[in-house]
Image (cartoon, rainbow, N blue to C red):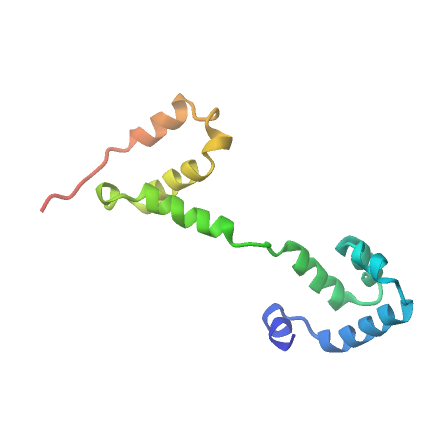
Length: 128
């Protein structure tokens, strides 16, 4: 908990957690009622008197559950950056990777203007 508080700059987190735990222990809720609580309801109780707990709950709600998005990006990069495309500039590589990742969403949005923009810059290859 200390490392999380230090990383996110949450001061007084330890003290507020002790008070927060006592508050919820005093409510004596049944286990089935505790299982149906969601973070928004819990956060509503924390907003007024527990600002650090409220911030910690906001952080918890914004953290991704998995790393699949990052793994998908690396898989796409492996597909896009082949040995024949090893000399392309970063902007072009990023654009190709974004098109590949979001191809299902943007397939209809690719128009002549986008293609013209990509082909406007002449590709320079240094021959040695």
